[in-house]
Image 1: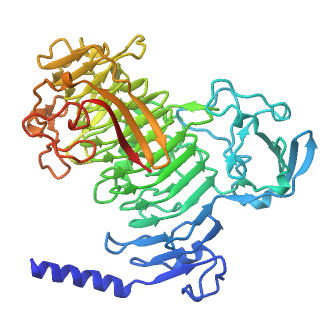
Image 2 (image 1 turned 45 degrees about the vertical axis):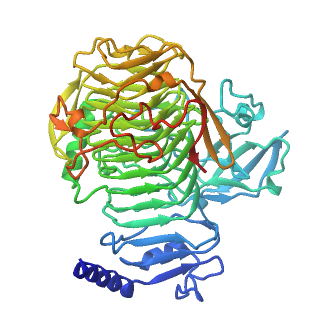
Image 3 (image 1 turned 180 degrees about the horizontal axis):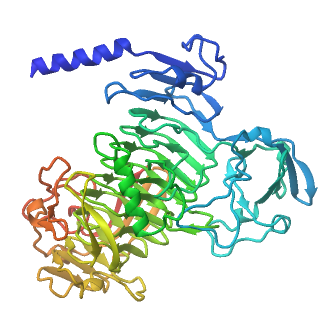
Length: 622
């Protein structure tokens, strides 16, 4: 053991000796040496010379640039780290300030902007487009207008800027009257914006200029850390699973990134993207199951494997106000961990729609861990689409998502969803099979829908395709959950486990509690049904998010078993067991808070029992 420790210390010391630290400051100059006494002015200058093991420390201020790292690190021990200086607020923006507004009519002002400002990418000429994007009958640009950090609403007609009307049934009806319109010619771009009672030349008004804040142009730029920044206002394009996905921050087609402790907001489409290889087929009529199967084949040709791609860590970020996704990835997120992120206000304006939207949207969540995230006001909370295998979704908080909390689409298992709090009206949209749902609090309905599409399943812990299958639905395990009825049921959506009564594949159900009329699974021998409403509510406070719930002691009169790999068995289609990525057995012996469960009789739901009556628990710490 001592010899091993000495070897590790030797390795770390050799890394530190060769590493350099470069400093960037608003008082700097790009002709400087990059030291703390003689810093660079731009982050890109430091990126151009940083090598494996180096650190780029950025000091307080606003940096209006896109960082395009030309190289990455060599390993976890020799990565390139970009970090905000300790205790200093560092902002990276994809926008520029515009202060030459001229009054046009009433409260509408006009800015005339030389196209040279945009270089070879003009967001006010670039239309949002791509596979599975639905424009709702109008044009949308990747550009945006911001007043004191808050984004405006693009209008397709100038008339709607001159006479704005609140959008009905919207999260922000007052905000929807702050509108803008654009047009361009060969020399200039013209932006019209309704600032109401504000003079834009006296306020901070910014417009999107760059398509990203931090994104490599090349693939296989590996082992980069980005830590502690405020990043915002990027003109990102739609990111379907068939296209290179450029986010406000993105890994491209790489391995081993750590994106942590950042505040990411106001991306036109996506906040963080975990990659999809770029090729000549990008964004062009591949919106079919057959088309995506071909995309997977091309990805394999591009080196899609655990050795080359994925294994990222996305943690402790706040991500908001992105109109497509907070985090997305198509095959590039394999073997990654997404944890402790606060994701909200995704698809907030709802000026368009599409089939690739959500707080977190992942294609091929192979051996991924998605844990301890808060997903609220996202439309859809979490979407696991195709090849979610070996995936573990644990300890997440979902509420006020208007589409659904979790959507599992055409996966064949095994995947595990445990110790989560699901409070939206549609808690689970199940178009998959081979899932295990364990120790969750499920206060919304469940939807079930078999699918005729043939989609892949993989060799265990691998990106290698083992076969294709249609989705019959069923083959799910529901153990030790709490279901709450009361949400209005519609066709195909029922409370409790009512939708699973006639699945083609068998179900495995035991130890669940059903409250307030939630539908009991008919063949479940060990369950409790109580006719009372637990009065679940969420209270948002400055120090965190609290769950309020009334608990009836009768609910504990049920004998539950500890859920393990042995109990869960094997998913039928893939013939694979529920296990950790390293092949070791799973045992769900802790609750939502990490408290050890009673080995002899673990409590149903995400919380190990403590008391009955009215409970108030902090379920998210700000």
